[in-house]
Picture 1 (cartoon, helix red, strand yellow):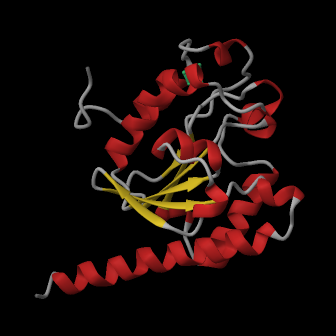
Picture 2 (cartoon, helix red, strand yellow):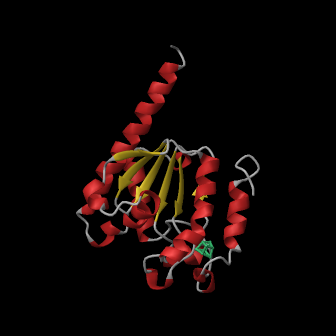
Length: 197
Ligand code: SF4
């Protein structure tokens, strides 16, 4: 088994692109490993690639991606600060919710990405990622919260796709991402202060 020291985001991406481990391999056009910086402070984890992502092999490049980009900009979060991926790396047919066996088969890729990046905060986008990573079930009741599990901080918010059909959720997502940006900024200031103490 490869340890984090010998593993790399490129290696994982190459494995994902050729992955045969679940039935989504038979219907995908392109697997979507995720993208972003090795030094990302925030990792965004959504549900699964959609049609545009499947076409391009890149995460969050359709309508939901445009919302996420806009919200990141409004929150002052640089793309260079983030890594974006999903619970499953291949598009489920007709954008259905990923099934349990698919999420389980795909999980080692996500765990390896987290182990390499070691993000300060994992931002969970929506119910599927919430339930898959933390066993939670109501993202609406818990959004805007920071929770800690096994030494890793998680920030909970809605999936940007939810705001495509319910525009009132745009302000919810905007407020949440501004809160997340503040958390990162406060943490940065605290750690630079600690360097002098
Ligand atoms: S969803 Fe994950 S486990 Fe399934 S084929 Fe794609 S990369 Fe492999």
